Figure (spheres, rainbow, N blue to C red):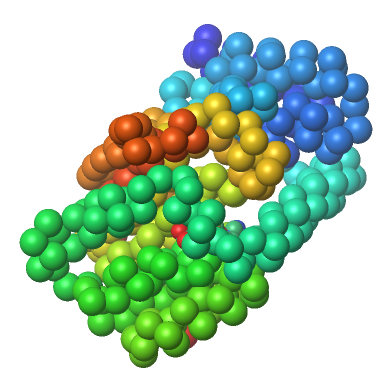
Length: 329
Ligand SMILES: C[S@@+](CC[C@H](N)C(=O)[O-])C[C@H]1O[C@@H](n2cnc3c(N)ncnc32)[C@H](O)[C@@H]1O
């Protein structure tokens, strides 16, 4: 009872409810929240601090940025999620906040897609500077098709496929593989690569990871390779992606471990400086996935430069829930 009252007291104020509403849409920094609510930074920070102390919000530092998000665990996790759902969307201030948040997200998306458009042609070189790709690709195959490479997958979906490299490596093991990406420039290169590769069972199409117009419960495996660190709401993307999996299907997330290379944010449009296993596990669990397996490929080794980053692979499986209704073809 005391915990519930403390949570309700911490949330019970108009600005705080507006903050909870905005944070229900996206993980955000203080400066973004300041723009959205149109209030001073010290004021916003004070409200945030109070709600962090009450357990309603999680605070997460990454390099120079600090993100706030609704708690999704503990006594206050359920409460704050329920409060955020009850906030009336037709309230004039909430409607204004929603419009400003949409504008900020659109600006961010535009900056990221400008970046992807500008690097599309050189993406192969950029990705190989990050980590030893052969090692990562071999680990991906170990986890999805087994070390003996004897598992066959009927349908694989690669989300944020970029130039389609994941489709190429899955080609010998999949009856069909589909890559989805929002960047027309990336997809142009992907199509050219796949044509050169000569595999007709590999396809790409334009789409948004947050709103996938694909059949639910249709994929044996979904891959998110080096994508989540660009997103402002990775949990929502994982939830959407999980809908694609057949019961027992696997989601493979490959991304950087937490790091301090701020330049990846300023120069390469990264939003997150890597992802922690604890947060990826929580997002997968919230999306109904379980049996999470993690494998870390440590950076280092004499031949690798100091700019190499540790890459983590997380494999999570869909349970035997009822398949959802098909949406689109
Ligand atoms: C770093 S690239 C990774 C490409 C590929 N997975 C690889 O490893 O080569 C990230 C890709 O995610 C795509 N992307 C980012 N946000 C997206 C979204 N909301 N919907 C669809 N694609 C998105 C970008 O266009 C980009 O091609």
